Image (cartoon, each protein chain N blue to C red):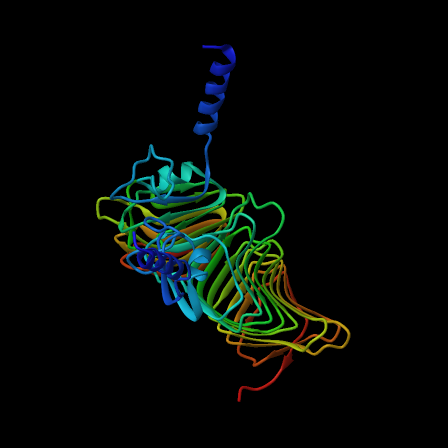
Amino acid sequence: MKYTSIFALTLFAAMSALAQNDLSWVSQRSGLDTNSCTITLPCKTFAGAYAKTNSGGIVKALDAGEYGTITITKPITIDGNGVGADIEGSSLAGMVVNGASGPVEIRNLTIHVPASCSCYGIESLTSSVSIENVSITGTPYGGLYVYGGTATIHGLTVTGATPFSVSLK
Amino acid sequence: MKPTSIFALILLAAVSALAQPFDRTWVSQRTGNDANNCLFATPCLTFQGAYAKTNPGGIILAIDAGGYSTVTVTTPIIIDGNGVGAIIEVSSGTGVQVNNAGLVEIRNLTIHVPASCSVTCNGIGEQNSLVSVENVSITGAPTYGVGLSSGAMTIHGLTVTGAANTGILVQNATATISDSIIRYSGNGILLQGTSAATQALIERSKMILNTTGLVVQSFASTATTARISDSVITGNTTGVSTTGGGQIITFRNNTWAGNSTDGTTPFSVSLK
């Protein structure tokens, strides 16, 4: 094989590894986190899709399912998409938003914290977060914990939280 | 083959090519193709493809979750994401553009503008039409979320997040805005009367964490008025501003506080 071909292949591989979407999809039924997260090759979890989505992009659920916990550090929209998307809390929180440089939107989701987890539903640290049409239920340690930054909350329900439902610090 | 058979075949082909548009058409990113006739069993791939096969006054519905591309319409039509998770990804131009169209409804959609749109990408644009926008979320990095220029728009259940210039621009037009949220944007809502009377009734809506929440600008003595009721203007650098005789009328029932500068004292009237 010529060196130029090898170089071209290497370049192609590098570009593929860096491929990022502006719009990514997840499906618990048909997704795989090794996929590219396009609609025909969806990912399985929000965290898997987040890793393949550009800053300022959007991740949407294709169908009902449980899409795993996620830590967010860049501007993004995570949209359960009205199809019945759930996040099951395990260790620390259902979602953590930490130091994102622009708006983060979390929409149309259920976040369930089981009794086995002393977890927040959503924890936002020094970020600009919008939460809309989200239900946090089960036994969250805290429903929504916002430390620094800003938050707009519209259509949030928190049920069964101890010691607080929403805390702004 | 007999000449009559050949004639019949040609006629059939001609009729198929001229297939009449339908009153109701469907799109599916998973199974659609714009070469289809856009009926339920053989849906189209994009809103624009379906629009071409829909009668004026007809309706286009999404069958399932997917991205349905930007669309420009010039006739009365209903574009309905249908609650299945439809999105329009705007890589250039405007998500839905409505020009000289009469009555148009845009419903149940996400419109996303990626950061890669480096010049001007907008959510919804309207010119000289009568548009209803309902249950639409515009997000990412739009330059303008929604822009009206002449004509009228009723907006209900809209969220705009992160518009670089303005969430909702009303220019020489009339708008009603209810149950909507504009946040993390330049201007939340901007009224500009430059050549025709411009007004907006803003009800049960929130302008939050923008550079300026509500801006009313009148040029050349054009009547430009925002009426605001049961709404929230908070967390903005400047709450409201008016220039050139632009007027804000409040019904004394708004939460208008907590901005770095709350801004112009409005003209207050009683509820009636």
